[in-house]
Image 1 (cartoon, rainbow, N blue to C red):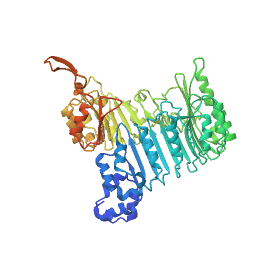
Image 2 (tube, rainbow, N blue to C red; image 1 turned 120 degrees about the vertical axis):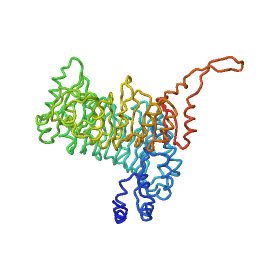
Image 3 (cartoon, rainbow, N blue to C red; image 1 turned 30 degrees about the horizontal axis):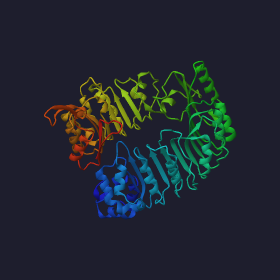
Image 4 (cartoon, helix red, strand yellow; image 1 turned 135 degrees about the vertical axis):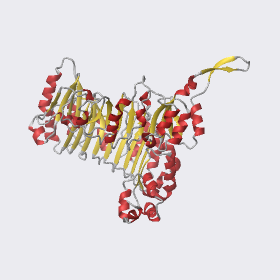
Length: 586
């Protein structure tokens, strides 16, 4: 579209178009084109959404420049303070103070791998956000201190307009959680990840959240902590994870929620047959329309697993399952583990190994229904023969090993949903096959290359093309790139567009070259072979002109040198989990 045609569009079209942009991309693309667009952005557009997940320091400055003009119209913020983006939270708060300027903020999502103090600081400031309705907290370092935890939960339940709350607070003990002491009359949806509640705590959670409609939670049924004394009439959607517990307790629990219309349940050590489910649904869950489950159990060696599988699948072959609800169920076996799930449940073939012991409750269904549910595929799947009519079209993660099975291209008709591709045993011999796959993966985000350590660098990786790849992981090439190879990488198609790079290099000077010449790079994760000085012992001349041995260098030497050479970087630090890896955020 020419500039003249673009200017002919009415304001309403522009304002609708702006809704599809992340805030920083919107300002970068449209601000400054002409006075009319500037007025639309500063005065009329009222729905700015900022996702800071991979934002560079340069883009933070763009955000800071515009903030005072649009702060009152920011409706969504998403922050992450992770290994790939350390110090982002501090950078955000250094540019954004105070938080109460976001008077229209409705959705706030925060992920942090570092400090619970950041969580406390954010929660304190949330009370200034009078229109906040959706809150998502994912924190991976939370102390098992009941007072701190209680304060966090109580503050969340005190937010006056909060409707949806997703909490992921990782502690050393998964069952560590505190029930809020405040009552929220606004919260309708609660998701609690990692933290596992006891059976009797669900009563208390529902009492302090009387308008609760949607609940996603893990429950510990391993001991009988009492019973559900409260009938929860408001609850309509339940997503339940149970790692240990009897079928009797689970059934009693579900009886207390008669208005559920959607039930998703994952049972990791329990198998419930079709007759039991039919009884509880017919007598107590009359509103249930959507039902999805995954169940598994490790059987004892004296049990005949094939006979049990036949009995289980037979219990799901009644008119209730097949005719009345059309809820279709699959059952398959791996070793002494028996898996049972509805066909609507997607799954990972690494966990559910495909086997010949595969059964369905509906004879009209065939194996293609099973494969259609696969979202994650590991390299061994295509080693086995598969029926020709199999079409796995929902794959999001794919690990693949060459040469390919002859049926591969017919079994996987498209790669439209593929986000992550791992190439195992990469060699130049299969360059055309890999490129053919890349050509068909229009939404691919991450590419990871594994190479045999005995091989020289396979240079076909410099030729690969895919316009959507943003993360390139070369750590598993078991190879340290020299200066010339780093230059080639910078000017390769994938190198030019790369935003997150994992690499091993020979010479630390290449770090500076990569940062200065990969124009779209946001995060560099690098291991340096010549950092052997870090552990090296050397002879030094002491005050008595005698030679002694001392260790030179320290963990800060290379980091400090990089900070001196790259002063404009957002952060330079060592990975706390892999200390020989340096992370540079741009």
